[in-house]
Image 1 (tube, each protein chain N blue to C red):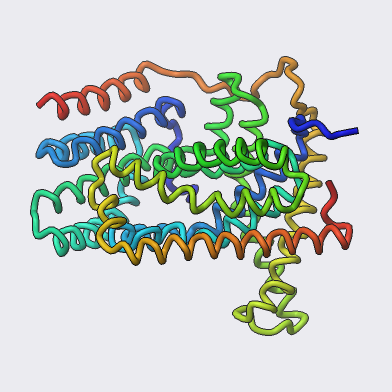
Image 2 (cartoon, rainbow over the protein chains, first blue to last red; image 1 turned 90 degrees about the horizontal axis):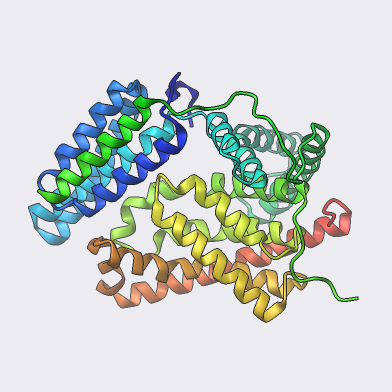
Length: 225
Length: 187
C-alpha cells in the first residue's frame, strides 16, 4: 500500500469498509444489468469528489489490464457480448471497491477500531500485520546480503534457499516477535479489560453517512430497475 | 496433570501470529498475477499460494500450540483480503473454524505435531469446495464452470494443492524443530 495514495481526510473507516462491501455486492449481483456500469461510474466519480483521486487514478491501469484479460477470456469461451460485459462489470466492481481501503492509513483504521472498543487483541494483530510489510522487506534484504557476504551460492537452489535464507529469516521473525511483544507490554498494553484511551479518536461526519447513503441508493436503483 | 484444551492467548502469542500472518500475506502476493486464470484453470490461486501458507502456518502452530491459533492467522490474513476478494475472507473464516473444531475433536489441541500437520494439510484444499459453492451461489458462472469443464484438470489441481500443502506443512514443521533444537524457538 503506497503512502502516496492516502487521503488527508478519509471517509470514516467502518463506513468506508461498509461502502466497499456494498459496491462489491451490488456490482457482482447486478453485473448482468445494463445499468451496473452507470452505478460503478457514479461511485467512481463520487470517490473523486471525496478526494480519492489518486487511488481512483491508480486503479485505472489495473482495471484496464484485468478487463482486457478477463473479458477476452470470457468472450473467447462464450462468444457472448452480454457475458463479456458482465465480466467487465465484475472487474470494475472489485477495482472500485478497493479504492476506499487503498487510500486509508492503517493507523486510522486501528484508531477507529480502538474507538469502537473492538477486542484489543484484534486491533493489535491488525496493526502489526498492516505495518509489518516494510519491515519485512528490510529483513529479506539483510538476509540476502548476508547470503552474498558468505558466498552462500545461488538463491534458486532449494537446499541453499532453505538453509541460508528460510531458516535465518524465520529466526529473525522469531526475534522480532519477542522484541515487539516485550515492547508492547512495556508500553502498558495488556489484554486485561481495563479502561484505555485512544490518542486520536476518529469521529463520523454527516458527509461520511451521505457517502454510504448515496452508494446504497445507487445500488438499490440498479436492482429495482 | 493434563493440559487444558483451551488456553488463553498472551500478548506475545498474538504478536507472533500477526507477524506470521503478515509474512504469509507477503508471500501470497503472487496470487493477483494468476487471478485472471481462475476462470481457465481450476484452483490455480490455491496452487500458487499453498506452499507458502502451509510453511508459515505450520511454523505459527508449532510455536503457539493453542486452540484458536489457526483461526487467528486465518482471520488476520482474511481481514486484509476482505476488500479485494470477499470470498477469500469468508473462506478463511469458515475453513479456519472448521479445522479448529476438527483438531479439538480428533487431537484435543495442537500439542502433537500430527495435529499441526493435519490442520495445515487441510487448510488450503478445503477452500476449493468452499469457493466452488460461493461462486455457484453468487452467480459467478465462469468461476464455477471451470471445475466441471475439464474434470481431469480439476482432479489434478486438487491433488497438486494437497501435495503442496503436505510439503509445506512438512517443511514448516522441519524448520520449527531445527529452531527449537537450536533454542531459537521457545514456547
